[in-house]
View 1: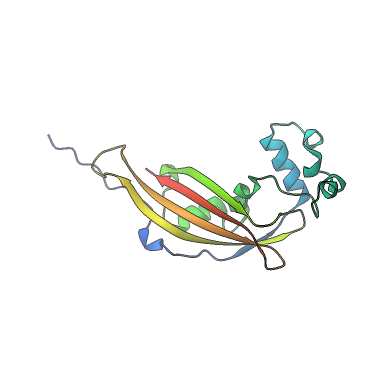
View 2: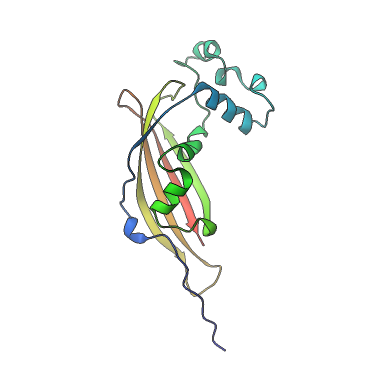
Length: 166
């Protein structure tokens, strides 16, 4: 008996090198505080670290304003350029088969409340892992690189996002 594995829609490899349109957002104090509370599993913002809700505490700690928590940029994709679906559709992937595998951040300067950030995202890698004929042992990998530039034109952060499509 021969088993035929149906062809599955996977990310469009012709998208390698594609640049998404730049998109800008303003970093808001309340979003920083809400994110910090969510990550810390706190019921309200009064119980999070002072630097994430109080400008004076942030300044005493050496920041210009309230800084973002280290993983805050994960939320950028949900606010920019069509959100997560805009990104997934942009590379031609199938959301029902997608796993967010890895996220890495390289910071060049602090990001604080009031900053206006422009994200420039590009598809930098697309490759296969495993063998197509072995069900469950094959995946396609897509890596996005996002440069985040502040209102002064400074590169403040670079992120690399890895998706696995199975």
